[in-house]
Structure formats: structure tokens, C-alpha cells
Amino acid sequence: MPGAGPLQGSVETGVTFAEAAAEWLRFIAEDRERKPSTLVDYRSALNVHLLPVFGERSIESIITEEIELWRRSLTDLSNRSKNKLLIQLHGIFRRAQTVWALPVNPLARVEKHPMRPSGDIQVFSPEEVWALVRAAESEQDRAIYMTAGFTGLRMGELLALRWRDVDFAGSTIRVRASWAAGQLTTPKSGKVRAVPLAPDVATALASLGRREHWVGDDDLVFAGETGGHLDGSALRRRYKAALVAAGLRSLRFHEYADFSVMPMLVRRGCSERFSMSGGRHIQSASRKARSVSVGW
Image 1 (cartoon, rainbow, N blue to C red):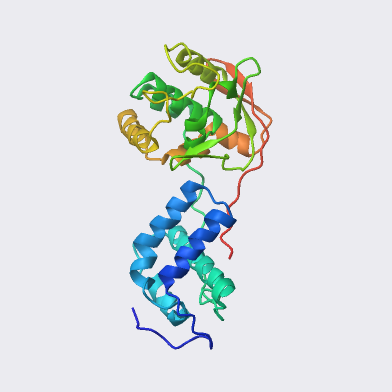
Image 2: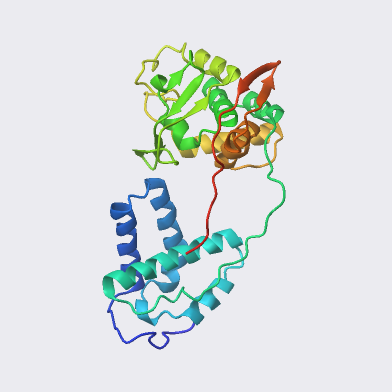
């Protein structure tokens, strides 16, 4: 990594990259109200990839050519991960322009890495979801995998789900909140939404509701031993073990919830009827597919 380069402007801020990164984190946490889970990801990227390289440097000494060399050194990361780091860097320098009048954002002329289509999205079929369910460690985990696979609820939304949100009569689950990084937040979409409650999911949840404790309207559907929120990290470990036991290919939990067959149909706005098992059908709901922009 080259040493400090020439100033890209006439202003000397006296601010280090670490200080600028801290201000950017404060800004997105307090002013932009980013979710705790998002902040955890940003802090991790800073600690692992950015602060060790740029932390003690003055922000005005970091130049475009240096960043170009640095990003070429990230040979062990995917283009998607590299672009995330570039976007984070861009945000830090843009905030420095606002707060300390940094004259130039060195990321302005840095091109992002190409994102080539990877072909057809790999999804779990209903049969594969059932294989995962059968390999689950407990009745509660079976209900979690079934609910995620056939409704598309993300892990944080599953961990925040309460019995009052499960409408058995109306065959609907209302997604009101998400639990991440030890805090309750809004769902990822930012608003309450309703998803279809498929018959097999309803059966699994009804069976779970016959347990001795934690069955009141305000209780968590997927509760820990003392009624509190489940440990998401432990749940991920059990999920990975169930994938291996079921002989299934590896999918991260959020990919499993997002890309199993039923969630894919829902997000593509299909109105067709979708068979889960045994000739039973449910009507899929309409919802626009989510898109991700990598623009500055």
C-alpha cells in the first residue's frame, strides 16, 4: 500500500479515516435510522477490511489511485462483496465532504466491479423443504423451517413473530416486526405486511401452540426456554446441521427463506394456485420482487 499521497484539494481536515468512519456510522445509525443488523454488518466490514488499511491515515491523503490498488488486492472476495466495501467507502468520504469540507471524494472515479448474472436462481423445491423439516432437531425447528420455506419470513421476522400475528381463521400471518442484534425493529420492507398461511404451516403452528407455556397472544411463537427470543446464531447452526442431515445443498438461511418456491412465487406477483402437498392448495399473494441497486 503506497504512503500518503498528495492532497486532492487545498483543505487539511486533520481528521483520520477512523474518525470519519465513526462519524459516518453515527450518521447512519441516528440520522438515517439504519437497523441494528445493518450496523453490525457495517462495523464488521470496517474492522476487518477498512480500518486496518486506512484507519490512521488522514482522509485527504487517501487518493483514488491508492483505492484502485487496494481493491485489486481483494482477491479472496466476490465482486458483490467488493462492491459493498466500495459503497461503504464512498459513503464515508461523502459524509466527510459534508462535515469537514473534504474537497474531493476519491471514490467518485472508482468503477465498481461487474455483476454478471449467475444463471437460474437455485431454489428449494417443496420436496426439499420437507426433507429439511424432517431433519430438524425439534418440533419448534421443524415449524420454523416450514414457515420460512412456505411463507418467506426472514429469520428476524420469525424470531419476532407473536401468536396475535397468526390468523388461523383468515389463513394469514401478519409480519409486524423483526428481531436482530438484540433489538426489535420494523420488518425489512419497513412496513407491516400480510402473507398467506398455508395449510401445512397452519398445522405445524397449531401443534406448536399446544405446548404448556408461551401460548398467550403476546407470547413469541418461536420462543426460547424462558419465553424470550431465540438465539439467531444457534438457530443458524442447527439449520446448517439439518441441511447436512437432509443431504441438501448449502443455502444461507436468508436465501432459503427468500428463494424457496413459495416465496419466489409470492414475490413475482403470481396469482396462480400453488400445491404444497397432498393436493392442498393456497392462493399466493401479490408482491413486487425486491431489487438491489449498487449505484452510488
